[in-house]
Length: 230
Image (cartoon, rainbow, N blue to C red):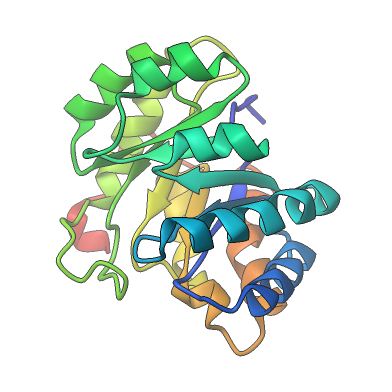
């Protein structure tokens, strides 16, 4: 497999839970099923509560061998020794975060349905570029939709980067049933919230999401999927 700057497979994203013990238990179950990375995404939590959960998750993820990132708050990520940060359109400039955070801080960037944004942000040396929503998302019901063909286009874009290259991440409305088609379309990892952490069996859901990424999928890069394939 091609060497990546970010783990291949299942990228869990936390739900808006205030119950930290419940969250820690769910993360353990997801890691047991093969989750390779986790993002703490608390958009509505008070700053103190967000920081407390981050401090609880950081050592657990180190114990489990799961790469740990924080959404938006890159200074918090540095303060607690998280592995990285995810930055959206309205967050800090990835180039500035790279400058201040240093080369070892993992940086992921949201590119929505915009390959031009991805191409521009590659100058900041992100570790992954994320596209979506790939499907209707219960977390962001008004989010723009991205076609499967965009993953193919993104994969071709990062193939020209120095190895290890940035990963291509898919996000938005993803369930275990979507993982195989996303891998085949060009995704290196899938970011999952509800279909993972709200699943009756979190470990089984994680296994199903991670399975298509354990071996290289058969792809036909020069025959992109159409948006109708979704």
